[in-house]
Length: 377
Image (cartoon, rainbow, N blue to C red; front, side, top):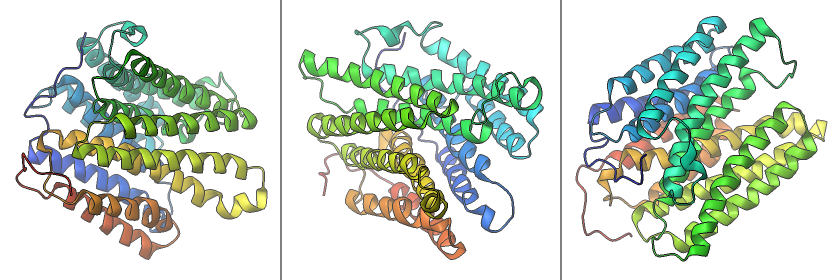
């Protein structure tokens, strides 16, 4: 069983691999606005390319913890790209078979590096870092298996009649593994010298996040608006507590600034989520502002919170970075918090946000050498 192993010294140092994954993220970002040019629903492609293809690959590569990804990781990357295209072109039978195959592949990697049964998730002796990591890859495989059932249920089986049990709703579940791996990254920067009460509190955060999101998803499927509001509010306060915990007990390194920014994105994700649920009770306001609010919610979650963790993993062995962290963070908020949501309403703003997103990634990765003793500016 994996127990807080240090990340390999040559993890993600291959520039060609970095460039490909970043290009995949930019492509995903581009498809978020493509419906303004082509009259098609590109939302699945937008979500799958970022969460499943880029995010899933990074999770598996991180789990293997080697300098070079294994053949299994590259097979996952290729098949997940095929899966995203099949889902986009509505080839649901083939997509279901590929989804199941991907689930088996992810499980083979999870079992090899953790265990067949996820018993360590219930052990107080296992670090929260490892628990979030294990939960991330477990949720990735479960999401693929459930997606297989959703595809078959909607096309052939018709066993469950719930209107929200569709790929258009469920594909957002692929963001949960990325969120969990970001939690794992964040908790790895918590001080080690905390007392038993605070360590127990970390364990409590793990179960609060996981059970809360699972329950929230069930409430969405069963169409329980009041219950959705209650659990969304509960999760919001849990996120605020985790943010405060990390602010006070996170080690004073450069990564902390980027992760605090990511947590701030997550806090605003909670706020927009609650407002979106409330707005559904006001049809006129919902028709006018609902889509924009949901778009803000999605971008804050995916390209705000989730991207923060993935970028830190990709540059893990480069820190501390020779860049102005506050400028990069300000640009991140400008692109994701303002330009990207507004880009859904205007082609000019969409192009502007895409260019700004590329510049943000360029500035984050442009450094060629690290500065071992550099202090944060």
